Image (cartoon, rainbow, N blue to C red; front, side):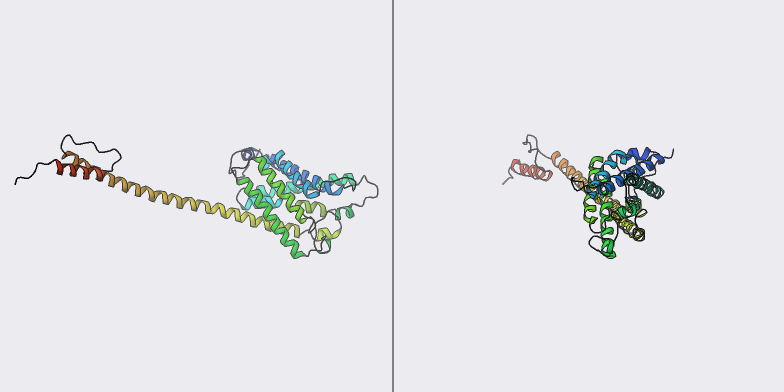
Length: 321
């Protein structure tokens, strides 16, 4: 079984990622995405006004947290092609792995949606394309607030960049446990998806948008391109920023080393000066008279030399008249 080529910057779950085979990692990505699509869309699809249903963004964020805690340690917990792309650009995931992750995520997302459709088909009179069109991501007339393409594009780029940045930052922090990382990414997904719900009905995940669009009305597949291009663009921006910070770190470390080296030279110079003063003190001690009082231990070398000269002056016999 093939071993991972994923970069492992810290200890912990990353050690498991490094030793998990490719099939195991792809299975984890497919299962996690399956769970996210199933829970996120199911919470919106089956809503009854007499209950207090969980909102779709909250359900999606919780599903992300659960998936990361359950199988994220096996693959890195991407479950989103945008995160896989950002991680590859940042240098944390091999490009081949990122591409295979995206395929596994698509398969898992489609399986999650097909599971929901299997339930919907058992409902008498249900029109699947019409039902799914209420869940599809869109702009202009298919946005709840009629937000045009430019506004949705801007939101998708910014939201995806923030989400990918959260993932990369949480994964890179040595202070964070895997639980903290999972909660941070899950909450970030819920908050961002809540913001986008009324604007584009998006969760910044191209897999989720694709799964819904394939079985919705024709307009959804026509607008699907935006919900691939914009999140991937945002992911690329976040990945480049993280990679830039990583590249700047060695330069800072080199500067620190140079300062330390300079400090060592100064220390050597001071040490040489102290040796010269010590030699002067030794010569002065050889010429001092017996019985002189001991100089306090805290006195400097210069003080000791001056003190000996003063005692010699006062203890010397008077000159003849």
